Image (cartoon, rainbow, N blue to C red; front, side, top):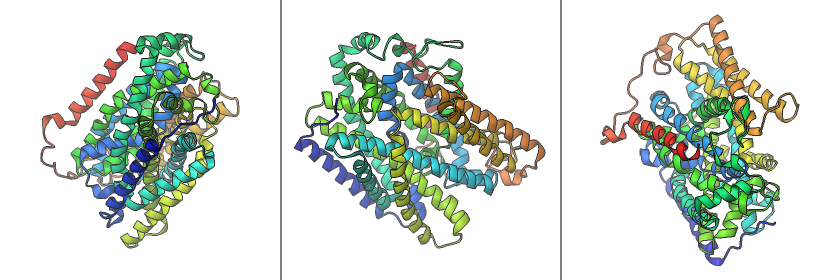
Length: 552
């Protein structure tokens, strides 16, 4: 079954209006860029509601739309673990515990925090690892964007990838992070407008949620296990569709992978660092947590519907399970609404790619180029470097898009990347932030060991036949756990035989070493009770637990 969207003139007009609006935001943002900090961190001037929506929209790219819908089709309701265990607690932890350290230290990136906490070796290692992961993940979003453009226009995959990359390059190069963030806010609402009709019309055809459940039970590749999140997760008796027990889900996904991604991934943290003060920075991930709670309705449910209505979805050409959302758009949406939905998909993928490219250019410019290659230049020089590096990142992303094209479920690929790159980094952060005795050398050797262990587990499972896991996702859970634990063990052992930094150099960087002066005064209204981070975080976690009840 070939995928080809029947776009009308009205649909193309809607799409053109959106693209013109995106470019308009880029040109408008360009006027406010005077320094490299303006280009790479929006001058630390944005309000919490803007950074909060951008925070969640930056994640609402291929990972969410194509990837989670693919998971919904392949693994069923258990996919909600990625949201209610695998996102909300970590987002709350970032806002309440970690953002005061990040923002208070006035760092421009996550790797720069490691330089202050540990040393240049740890900083450079993390900068290189992050730059690599950023362009790999940018390629995933670019590949997803190309899938939609091919379905919409009938273009070859390679041509769609190049055209999509060129457009993202233009608007980020024009307006830097401000352009990316304000476009992400716009894209968030466009995404909702595009996906909500798909869910409504799909459920209507199924006869409501009850009708969908009945059809999933008998669908090819479905079954009763597709309809439960917690059943069949016992140790030694795993029968759930995701192929993992509760230890892997809670520890591997809910702790290591989730906290590793949300608290150390600069593509997300960068949005909070662009906020106007400490309060706004802390509330950024907490504001983003509330829409995140309900995104499964727009991803997991369409995945289940696609499993029912698309014959042999797993084997559909050029995408497999990744085609779930495009097929539903083709099936349900009439002219006009189809244009909105396609625009929403393109918006999502551009948001995801832009987030990774904008974080890549910041880390490369500040943490690699300025720190180790060309020190003490005029700020205008680094602004130019940032723009050039943006183009370089997009070009590399084109190459990594073809790597992503080799996976029938891009979420499996992304989770493998997170288990290798983010999990050991989180271990280094969490130990270093809560144990001031951790030494600079421990930071380097722990991070290096954890990264190699995560890569070894993945290669041993995928290519060498050393490990046997129930699914690709289970591998990512246990691979993440192995990377995390090996990092912790090495960090502790090395710390015992090497010298730590004195408290005077750790102030504001780790618990027990004293605090720095407040990073910024509260703006008017920030002190209101309903803006308290602890309250916002507590409510978000409570809702996430309650949402499990109907799907246990």
